[in-house]
Every structure is written in C-alpha cells, then in structure tokens.
Length: 200
Image 1: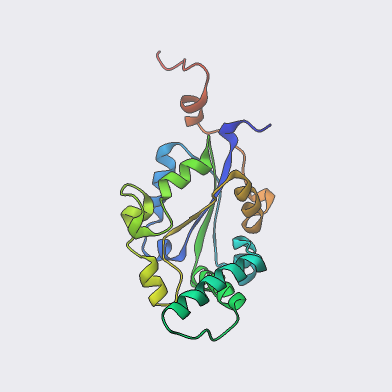
Image 2: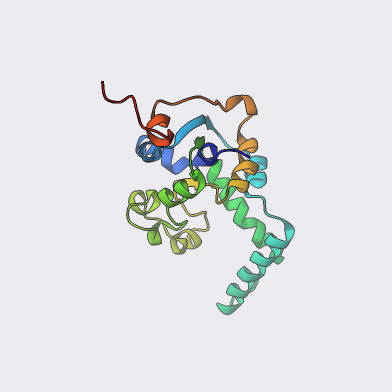
C-alpha cells in the first residue's frame, strides 16, 4: 500500500489561467499548503485527449442530452438534433475551450492531495465558489453566462475528484518517465515522526 503522503492528484491550469497571467498565484497556493510538484508541462490539448480525459459514455451523453431537450421544450423551443448529440456538445464545448491555447498540466503529491486541491480550487462554478478558493477569488464566470454564450464555463483549473480519477487521468497527459520521485526539504517538517535536529 502506498503511504498517504505519496498520494498524487492531477491538475490542469486551463487556457484562461495562462492568458490571465495567474499561473504563479495558483501554483503558490498549492506550494504554500505543502504539496510537492512531481510533474509539470505546457500542452496544447487535442480533441482526442479531451474526450479521453472527460471519459463520458453514450449513456451519459444521452442522459444529459435528454435534460437539454426537456429544457428547450420547456422554453417552447424544438430540439434540432438527437439528445445524444446535445450531450456530446457539452464535451465538444469543453474540448474547444481546452484546445484554444496552452494549458499547464501538473501532478501534485502529498497527504490527501486530491482532497486538498479540491478544497483549494473550489466549486466548479466561479460565481458560487467559496471566497478563499482559486475559482472564488480569481474569476467570475457563471453557468448562466456560459450557456447564453454557448461555451464552457471558464473556471481556470481542472482537478481530479478522487485518487482513482487522478490515476486514470495522469497517463493521458504524462508519460511515466516525466514524473519525478524526489525528496523535498519540507517533507521533514511536514511528515517526520520526530521533529528534531532544528536547534543547534
């Protein structure tokens, strides 16, 4: 069994984070809490990577699409395509957003890294994300505006929602040899059983 302090999570700083010059601010939040960066690289996502990353099947597309068709009908509008295509449009919009420019992919390591990053990043919708979180503090987009403009919500960061999801996502973006295991000087103060050797 892997020690909890070695738990890894996957993060993408999306094109809006790069374009707004927020990389340093966002990275510093991860570093300040004690997480260790074990992999980092700039990428321009491909459509295949995006569809593999978001990992939705036809059942999910159909279910989401039926909900969208129901919303259209409630507004007195007629659906112009099959429900499954409306469902796929959700991931197509995400892919378009992710492919618009460079993103920064990260693998972070530390105790409860998935839960810690999720807490720091905040809820998916920036306008309802808590104050103090990355999304709550650094952007103002909302589902309403994104839906009106027929685009994905611009929320700066993707983060894995579970350790299992992180393990599935990491190989989509990184080769094994791009992830570096190393000791960090702060590990001693964060994890050593006995804090000693500080005083001279």
